[in-house]
Length: 304
Image (cartoon, rainbow, N blue to C red; front, side, top):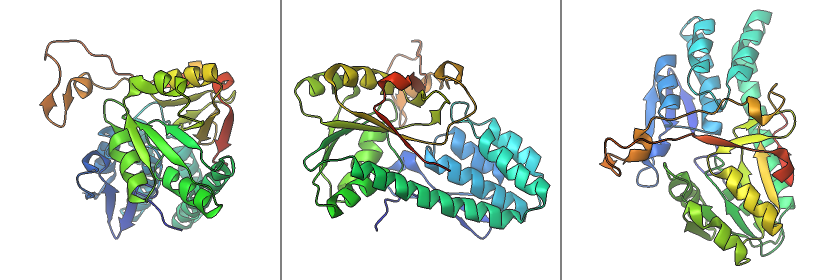
């Protein structure tokens, strides 16, 4: 089974964390180094890694910090302050609980990561089982290496599938990451802009939609990259199945309780050092939106 570099984008070697710099793809596959928890937290804030990469980085950061004899409560506080929508408190509380119980922390963390890898593969297998030969799948943003794996498993089942990927503004995770990893794995993918979705669906060019989620609430609402909600609404109108690959549910009851991260104005106005808009213009960039459970055909749970 072959994995995309985005499937497991963090490694810990000795006292150094190697973080796949997703902001440099597809031009360059390069890793940045973090040697302490503050550098790791900065990589999360700057979106050098995201989605499952953040989860891996949190766990490996605790592992590194334990080896460096750092105060893990202080490490947890720094991690919890990085990004609000994908809450890391579930992970940090779990690690602090292991530490308090006297369980061997390194063994617990490495065991959790092995379980996470196995569960992600299970998610890919479950999703591939929902596909039919000839399916054309629309996706939004990037699901950290799962789409190439899903397509690979589907191919082994005798199914041919192809993809449309939204650019996913303003960081272009769809065109930079999703398109790159699908092409790298040998699967057909076509890029569209975010505002083409309704027209594309009206032409009957899409048979299923698969997105990820950064947050799942107890009632089935999800938060995902901004733009997901409008895709779900249009999918409902055209009666196209809308599948969500989910993390475990949080303790929040509904999506209305999710804190939506507002990114800096310049992330809309500047891209890779090039100014795209007048310096003085206002910008509004909620990084996520909430899709209600009633618009979701099926949740594909991680089950950790």
